[in-house]
Amino acid sequence: MKPKVSEWTNYELQPAFILGFHGCDAKVGEAILRGKEQHLMPSDNDYDWLGSGVYFWEGNPARALQFATECAQGSIHSKGGITTPFVLGTIINLGHCLDLADSSAIAQVHESYRKLQDMMRDTNEKLPANGKSLRARRLDCLVFNLLHTFRREKGLSPYDTVRGLFWEGEPIYPGAGVGENNHIQICVCNPANILGYFRPIQ
Image 1: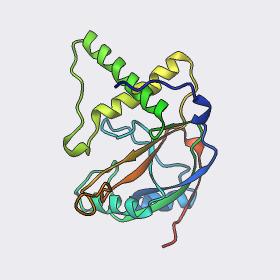
Image 2: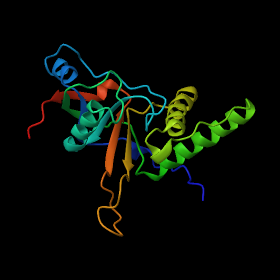
Image 3: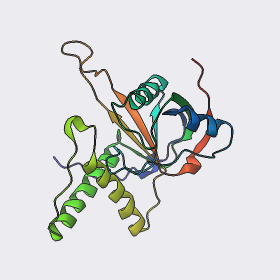
């Protein structure tokens, strides 16, 4: 059944701050902490899960370190490359948030996909596909980026952040509904919603 867009748009404004964690190279993290760089560079790969923006693991420094370590070992790729794994903490104001735990947000993403289908049909182009095991998400990335474009074209207020809940990995025990890599990702579209960075304490 097609999800319906809700009228409960007042609740897209999130009232709380969250802690996010970014896996990167130590040189990048230290440059941010020392004020040599103001912000992390946004990711604009065509396979990013939630579209273009700066990515963080919500409340999960261990997963950020795992990501950075896997990049350093060459098992996954990171823009700019990682030699020395590092975790950078940040305080994020979710602000106007496209939260994929919300029915209205899901409906908007579905509508963006439907419009993308129409566009591709009109130009005789083929829809991109998400990769094997959903590690590379070219279809999802395009759908989210187009959603932001459609909002700008309609004069609607832009989203500051996108929040996605992902069930990933093998079940933690037979029959479990919990995967070993379940996580929440935050994609920050508006750098002004990053209020500060910090060095996490283990």
